[in-house]
Amino acid sequence: MKFLGLTFKSARRSKRRTFLTIMSVAIAVFLFASLRAVLDGFNAGAEASSSTRIITIRSTSLIFSMPTSHADAIRSTPGVQDLTWANWFGGIYKDPKNFFASIAIEPESYLRMYPEIVLTPDERKAFLEDRTGCIVGDGLAKRYGFKVGDVITLQVGIPTYGTRDYDFTVRGIYESGGAAVDNQSMLFHWKYVDERSLVKGQVGWYVAQISHPDQAAQIASAIDQKFANSPNETKTDTEKAFQSSFVSMFGNLNLLLGSIALAVVITTLFVAGNTMAMSVRERTTEIAVMRTLGFSSMTIFLLVAGEALMMSVIGGALGITAARLIVNPDFMQAGAFIPVFGVNGRNVVTGLLLSALIGVLAGLIPASMASRLRIVDALRRVA
Amino acid sequence: MALIELREVTKAYRRDSVEIPVLDRVTITVADGEFLGLMGPSGSGKSTLLNLLAGIDHPSRGTIRIGDTDITRLSDTALTAWRGRHIGFIFQLYNLIPVLTAFENVELPLLLTRLTKKQRRDHVMTALGIVGLTDRAKHYPRQLSGGQEQRVAIARAIVTDPTLLLADEPTGDLDAKSGGEILTLLQRLNGEYKKTIIMVTHDPHAAERATRLLHLEKGTLIEQERVS
Figure 1 (tube, one colour):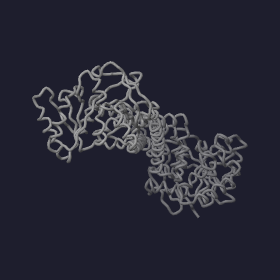
Figure 2: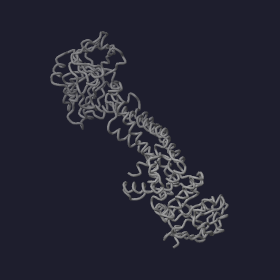
Figure 3: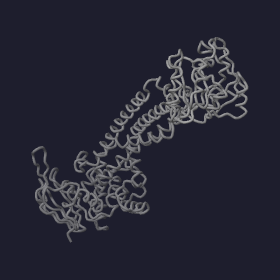
């Protein structure tokens, strides 16, 4: 502890250089944490998805629909306990850039099968009773200032749903009880949309409740078998696989963002290492003096390495703090694309550990240089 | 009683394949409480001799005994620890740490001891009191004159109450008045506090303050002279 003050004082020797080094680590950790937040946000739905819900879509693509007649066939499949369905509505709220998910659902069964959608009993009742009613996530409500009783007008984004605008009355504002359901969506009655659709009786995806996760593959296969060789063949998978398929539409995000984060971290490592090496070179005489006073090679090594570690961890803490403040739905309007968006506790710890690793690696060579300095040679350099 | 015994100490440096002799079979005995002046022209080996006594360089041959310890037999680690306990070193260019205050510079060697913060503080203030700079404790080196910096350096050298004080041209970078004050301080440390001092200088006026003078030339001890 008594050497901590010495380390702090040494770091303040060149304030500008120390500041820049700290900032370089801070930016690296900020980028790392932000990229991790994006990846985690994309993956959150899949990670938190239910293991007892399976999803059936058209085998060709999610963008093609299926007839409602599939519902009875799926419901009658052994192992299926409950069934609901939904359509991607793709509505436009005032301007296309105001993007959020607008989904037509079969309300009663959907709310039953998704207990993660948390509503008060009154809101639930009001929504179920109003064919033109809708519920919005609290995140979405906060973003646009929606309140219960407001009328939201959505322009049609997909031609199948006609040409006239749709008016919805907000009947409830739900909270998300888990990452499988985001709080940035708008949900409304499938029937209301179906009535005005150009093609009636179409469903985007079915969600089946099964009794045992172990049976998922078997039941999925049985469902798909029922529609094999029909004009509307299906592809049934777990909710996790369904959620992951959305992420994979963006390409290999893990590899792309991971590579960017790695490149930033390695660059910062070189910057911090070079800074520490410069600092040690400038302090050659001082180190020689300290060795003369009785400081051991190991103590010098630890002082220099400790200084690099301290600067890096301070930078890491700043970067993480900035990431926590900036990368969250309240500050950034990315919530609709990445509904569960924010730097979580695991990424805070990882970011701090990463900054410590940068500090240790950046300090190793300069600390080794400093500890192996020959006192006489170092003193002669200035004498 | 002899505090220091150098026997047949030889030092040579190797540059590429050429061996450059610096000290040649130097034998010296220094009594406890002596103030020894080491004189000689540049390159005569006096600073090298001081470095060997401080244990920051190793002789090529010969033995150096200080107190009960033959320091030529100590490992680097043991020598570092020994140096911290027994040697106070005063440099020509003071070599204070610029980011530390006078107090913190003097405290530096004490950080290696087991003293408490309060004990360290007491020791530092005593040392600064001896050199007459208690009122400059919070000043940084850049806020001090050359003479004051050297006095802080002396306080740093004596704060651990070392067995031996080694001074390498302590007045070499100072004006005559400041230099005189430093020499008076060294004399006081020798006379009043019974510190054994070995001082390298090529200033005859500085050398007069020593109780005994040794002359080195081309690495060989050529003359011994008792001043007072």
